[in-house]
Length: 211
Image (cartoon, rainbow, N blue to C red; front, side, top):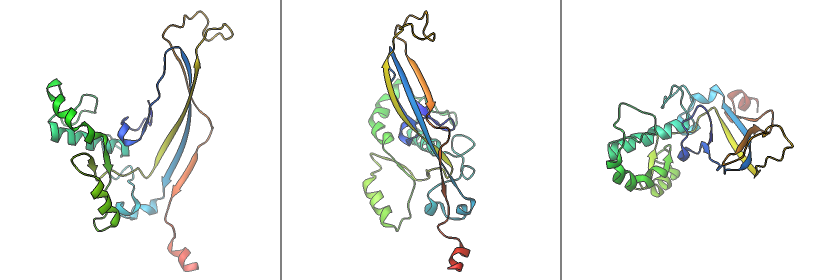
């Protein structure tokens, strides 16, 4: 599982990339990153308009806001309200009772809802909002209306390849190692730098005045 160290690894938030490592293989995991940041001037806009949240605006599971943590927090709250427990693999909050086998029926019945997450909210009068509300039935999807992407974030992409792992004696790395149900994994960045994107106002007042 490849994910940002600042996020809780949750698949539904889109911040996790999974790859299957088979026994007896040598695997190459090539990482690429794209970072983006938002100028301070954008902070004056409403969250509905800029559609992102600065890390110090809202706290989720940890001290700084992240989109993934907000989705996890929303999901944990809904599981607690629906089934009265919290799965053990989520961060513990507010001394919630951990789910046991007696809660399996409730968790299984609603699991589709927690895998279909509808993030953030729109202005009620907009056409986008009406379409969004029509397709997101609350009985089968989880509405996380307060979860927006982070205004400053790094996104990772992953490409994988693998070959059969053999101890052919040509390298000293596997010398005197009996390869049985073992794998070798290389995780590395393909470039020294990353693409960095900036989100800013389309125009400033002095630009409009100069025209």
